[in-house]
View 1 (cartoon, rainbow, N blue to C red):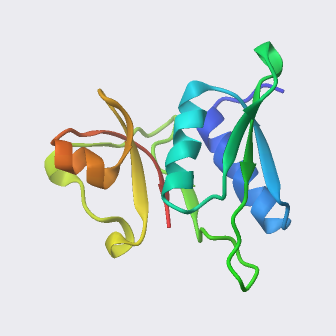
View 2 (cartoon, rainbow, N blue to C red):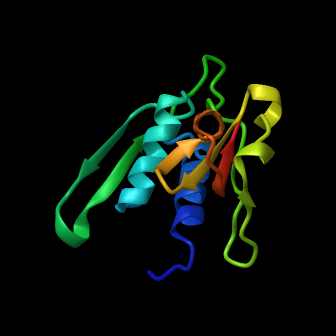
Length: 132
C-alpha cells in the first residue's frame, strides 16, 4: 500500500485502533516514527512500544493506553505540518500547547523533541504533530 504522508498514516492508525478499543496498533517501521512513538510513550499518551520483524517486514507495535473509564489516554493526535502546508516555528514563537496539558512534537536540527525541550535549548523547527 502506497501512501504520501507516513506520519499522518501512523497517527491515523493509532486513533483508529483507540476508537475500535484495540490493545495495540501496528505501523510500518521508520526511525522517525520510532522516535515519535517514543516521545508519545514518555509523555504518557501511549502505553509502550516495541519494534518487531526484520528488513522490509519491520514494524512498530504500539500499545494503546486507556484511562480507568475506558477512554484513550490522549484526546487528540493531530498532524500539524502537512504536505501542502508546512508549519515552522522559531524558539521564541513556541507556545504551550493546550495551556501546558498537550505537547507539540518538533523536528529540529538536533532531532525530534517536544516543544518545551526545544524552547529550553533555544532551537525551533517544523511542528510535526500535537497531542493532548
